[in-house]
Image (tube, rainbow, N blue to C red; front, side, top):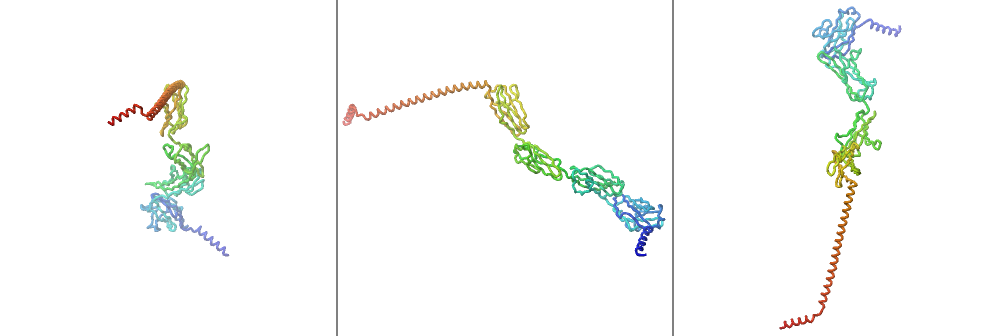
Length: 506
């Protein structure tokens, strides 16, 4: 017999020994977790040597559990046939005569944490399985469940972003501990979810399915497992935050002030939008039938607003998934003013119109010779709204208006007043009377001027004549004086002189 044949015989012998020569062995979980105040299940199956099969009967078979040692006298904590007050409360649910040693313990606490050994006794069969043991760890709080994110039925990482419109599933799973009633799973965003039908009693699974929208962006979903114990409920949670990418939503353009925008003030327009990723903003306005881009950015500021800035402004929010627009009307308020085209005309009656503009729309009043005018038999006033800021008022005067009457249009709003005076045109009769008075006045004035001119001329003539006469007299007097000075003394004067000389000599 060659060496290969010998090896085959040896291997076959070992295999036959494994089939016909059974040994003591046991199968049970190495580690088990239990919740304090609840129960614990040890799934257990054992094997014995073939020679003890006749001893293992249903009535005689007894299962024992030892804790933290294999000495029956010192470490016994459970006897299926002889329960003790200081022993664990429980029962063996498996059939020992069929080598099923599955056991349940009730109302465990932290003091029951330890290493457990199984011992089988049935007639002459007494054996402790000391090689394979089960370690029980009693917890004060249940282990938390696990939440996983699935997009289009594919598992993704928690922080991975989901595209709007995608099919999303949140799966919550938990390894259940022994509990009566069984634990339940609930979602924070939904009512209580019933247990899923599953053949695996030790595991719970709950799915939350929805189509991703912007409403789920940055929403945290929490799955809670709840154990209903006799004296209290014990819970554990796991959470996940969903991140959804979506196009701009709820885009809004607004003015930064709640009060009116007054001409000359500083104004800022602001645009806001919800989107992921963040958007870029573009401001524009319509100019001559075309959209004129102004600037980019969240805000648009005017340091000193002017009436030319009135109108609609458009904000466009854009990211890689789409765009959305919003508009705002920049309504500038300003003081009332009156158009220079306002005027009066005269036919059979006097008709005047006054156009005013202002924001808010102004009020118009008529004053005749300083007094307010209202509708009457001789006066008719009408108004027409030309625009949201413009108003036109006309007044018809049926009564005779003398040339001394004055008419005034007064416009006012909350920001200021304006007024305009009108020169009233006269009727044909009034104009003829006035013309006649004017001619008479001019004739009288002409006569006065003529008389005045004649008087002045006569006076000038008299003065000139007098001046000439005086001049002639002066010239005659000068000639006589010169003749007297140059003539010799007369005979009489010579005799007188001689006589005075004789008297003086005596």
